Length: 295
Image 1 (spheres, rainbow, N blue to C red):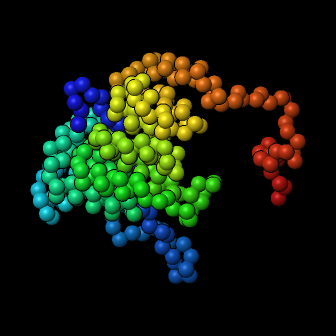
Image 2: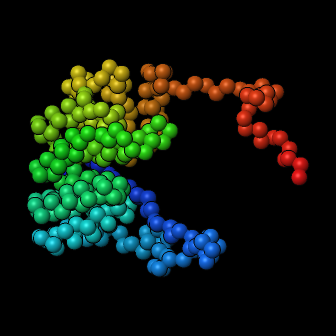
Image 3: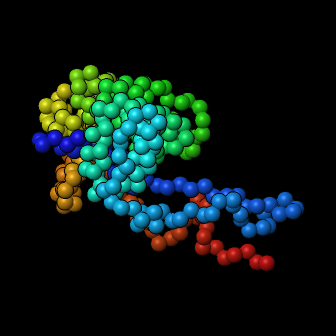
């Protein structure tokens, strides 16, 4: 976890308040088949997420202990807890994970949860991968490597030019490469550098660059070691600023301003000021000022 002379790695998915997605029952059809009756459900409605958070007792995670089926049950309970955890519980989570990292049954249970959630629950998969990265185990490293090397889907659901299935897997692979970088072994570092250079998704390449730098202290030496592996058009990622824990907004804003001053091409174009005259109707399809049609 956090050594005395190391900064905390960027693997905090389990301390992020993940969105809670509930299923909404369809309207019950009336005798004619229309949705004329009020909605109904067999189960009583779940409570509001805010009520669940208020009912939680902080810093009381389920113990990550046991073997066999008990290990699997405790792992599932811990992942549930981690998905609801808040920032103040970060170190509590890390202590529990560190204590369990030498238990092979717990490590395998986390891997199984990540593998299962990958197909059905994206948020839970991210939490499981974050926990696995924090464990820094050899078995966990193998799973992370295998996940990173899975080919991205080429068919599926396209929304505004984005293939959703490919993006979802890339997000999981980005979390996996962050965990791999936290291993800090020669082989793991070599894989992170390979990902930074060759992975087909910019999401994953960018995370590999960031995670490598973070786990090597954001030093100039780390940037020099990483630079030959970074694509020409992505060299800017080597200088990307980050806000560290405890840093004030003023300090971060100064760093960001200096970064943008050095790279003005990243600034968005200045907004154009419209004249007092409205656009011609044929150039303005959103004619909200027109009077309503006569009845």
